[in-house]
Length: 186
Image (tube, rainbow, N blue to C red; front, top):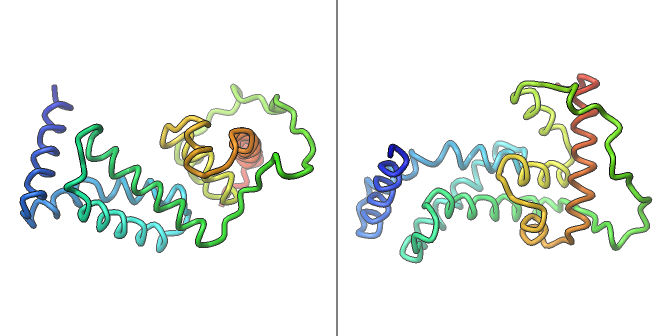
């Protein structure tokens, strides 16, 4: 019931924004800015870039608020904008995700050599380790673990093959487990 009440309140804010109520823009920003900043930061791994993405995302969302059709929540709609802008920010920095099907890379075994069950760490420690991953690995694992996208969706978002996403995810997971196991967190 509480979630429904929150959703109705957020929908009312969106409607007030559509009517030009400036205060409602500020309220929407306050309600979503921290979560959207964190989403962007997990992808771009740079505070200034995440701040830029956040501002650009809200500018775009507010400019297009008339096109918001309530097919999802406003937060989900805004998160999609933030994720797309974050990925574009990485592309501007010339992040390279190597398409595994276009390389002669060696076959990576499907099984991890680590005992995942034996590695139980706090969420904050894992987030610190994720920050240490290379851009491509961090982007794929963040979109999957933190944002809930499946591998096919990630392939579409990043415009790479599903095989590349699967390989990037597997390598990211191995690297992440290695960082955690070795205590290589900064």
